[in-house]
Amino acid sequence: MKEESAWFSERVNEWVHVVRWGHYGTPVLVFPTAGGDAGEIERNGLVGALWPLIEAGRIKVFSVDSIAGRSWLRGDDPRHSMWLQDRFDDMIYREVVAAIRADCRDDFIEVVTAGASIGAFNAVASLCRHPDVFRAAIGMSGTYDLSDRLGGHWSDHFYFSSPLHYLPGLTEDGSLGPLRTRFVVLATGAGRWEDPDESWRMAAALGARGIPNRVDVWSERHDHAWSTWREMLPLYLDDLV
Image (cartoon, rainbow, N blue to C red; front, top):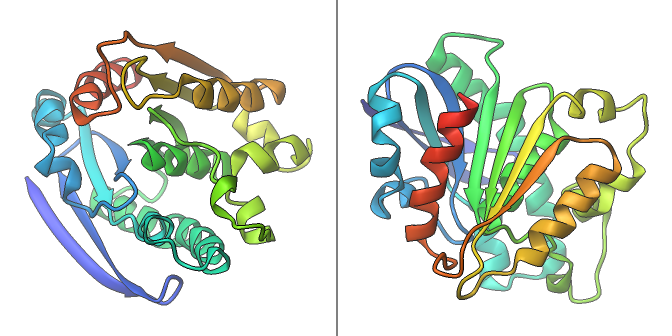
């Protein structure tokens, strides 16, 4: 029930790897953490934690290389990282969603996104920019404000990639209406290396525009760690699908 695919994307000028686990069900696109590849979630036990839902045919899980996240993590020129973040989003929308729909043999099926840390940023950003294809997002232990990595630079590439910054400017005749039919879960632990304020800031930006969302703050024993995300994600997906 596992399948891997790869292609060269001119949008990001890199090879893109996608892994799929499962045979049937709601497609769930799980973004890796900052430096992760498409297989990261399996190596860290997240696919195993989701296996009852996968085996039952309730979800098909997909993951993709964190191409933009690697650039932020490496400390590349922020002007390049901003450009790449924007192109990564376009690649997800134009190429990865097309691959998911082809795999599901359904040209109109909607996708649930999920991710932890910077993966949560990508999960929420994808839904906010493209509510026509993504129906819900689950952000875990999210890092939602990347502006401290810009080194004093700024561009439209970053603005339109960052929901915290562009949501206030959305107009009623844009994607705001469809977004109000979507749902975002913002879950965070209260343990080591966690920052619940990030989730509350993201929730405030969503709520100010009438976009349904919920913040769940887990206990102090839930650190910024895979053990927390293995516990969280199966519960939220069980509710959503």
